[in-house]
Image (cartoon, rainbow, N blue to C red; front, side):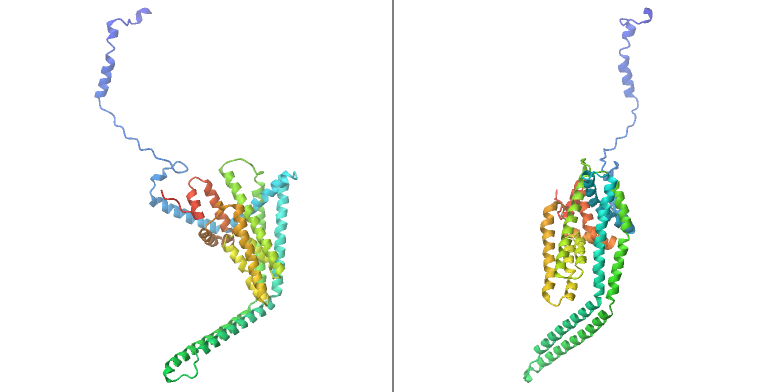
Length: 421
């Protein structure tokens, strides 16, 4: 065995040392293989690591437009389902705190708490619907009386216009004019003829309007409105089912952190504050109008509650809505002014002082943003879309505040332009 092991001191073993550099030199002298340069490192900006930064704007812009159109068409054609779903989501944010309270304080099982909370909410809506129905039926009974009152107001307005027309005609009369003022008299006579023609035209239009008012089936219109309300309430079953699944499908409110938990808490706070201030507005407005003695006071209070979800515009509309009924119902100007002034003060105080102090300025929306949201959601979902426009936009702003890269868009919704770099 020892004979097979070479001796390192022998020359044949030592001669193997220079073989290695010679082999390396022969390899370097041979043809070199071709290597392609590696592509530059691409920053993955997409959600799935796609190199979106290398996609030209001529490709992304049409895709974004097509996506927006597709979403718009989907929202429009699915509105029979989406509108009750959005309303159910809003109701669920009101029901969940009540369910948590029943579960913690009354020690009820969550399923029983959900049923009890939904029963309370259902009784509340049934009571409001009954009051509105009674008010509308009362107004339908008084329809002929209101028609006569409208005709009297039209006659009164016609008398005022005729009186002013006569005064204007007398202004152009100049008794005792001599030949030097003959041209001026001719001009004044022509102006008097114009005034007389305008009075004639007004009388004709006045008669047409009075005839239209006399033939107006006011009672049928009010009953038709009541039927539409009944049809709307027919969706209550679908909303009820949605609320059961939304509330029953989630556990008790957890305290875990995370971006979505914070978004959920902020959305819940916004909806709770908005509903509370809107309910306070509706109760105060309805009570004040009832004390004054205005017909449909409950209806106008409920409309004040709904329209308070629309910032600025809703408060103005809710304040002016009782004006036609007040003008028809009262003979003097005092009650009419009270119907406008006192609810207007309530709307201003709650909308501009109390609500911003509770909610803070972080959820404020620029008036242009609110207007565009009203137009957009009104086109898609009609009156319901206009009602949900401000809450939906506020929720979108809350989400954008907590999403990386969404701050600039959130600032635009609030009316803050992005700072130039």
